[in-house]
Amino acid sequence: ERFKEMAPVPSRVLYVAAGMVLHAFISTLLRHAGKDTVRPKAHFVLLVRLTFRNEEKLQDFLRIFRPMAATVKATEPETLSYEVSRNNKKPLELVINERYATVDAYLNVHKETKHFKEFRPKLQSMQDGHDVEVSGDAFEELGVGYM
Image (cartoon, rainbow, N blue to C red; front, side, top):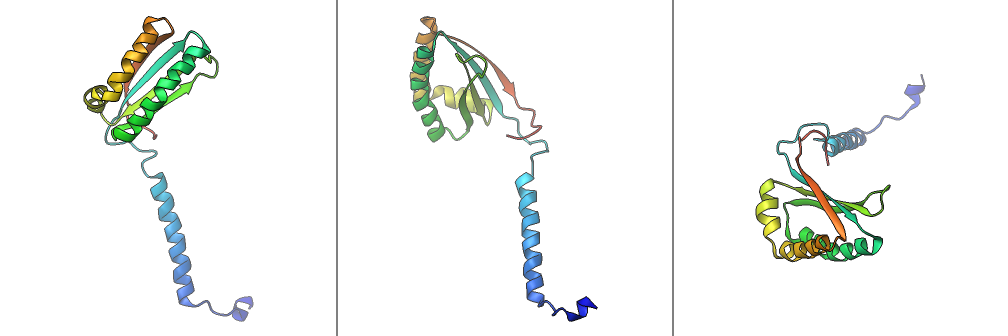
């Protein structure tokens, strides 16, 4: 009997409400699409570990890395990420996470740029002066998960 007292809802209000619900549902699907699936193309990843002699040398490195990273971001569209992180337990240790669309984007684009060719000798000089130890590994993403 309570329903008899309610005024009927105009059909256009129902259409708008249904549209809003549908929009929210599709937006959610699109936001999460591919996050639990296998990506069709594997990316190439380098993890470069740098261990510095002291904080001063670490800061010297960051001074030369910052402009390098900014130039990579601005000029290398197939470099998907180029980020330095500090080890929480070993404050003199950094890791550079380099992520490329393909191994070719690393070998034949990134390594051939002017900014890389200017940066690498500066890092090598730090290595030769025993200010930093550099090691690293290369990986191919399996395409399981998401970034």
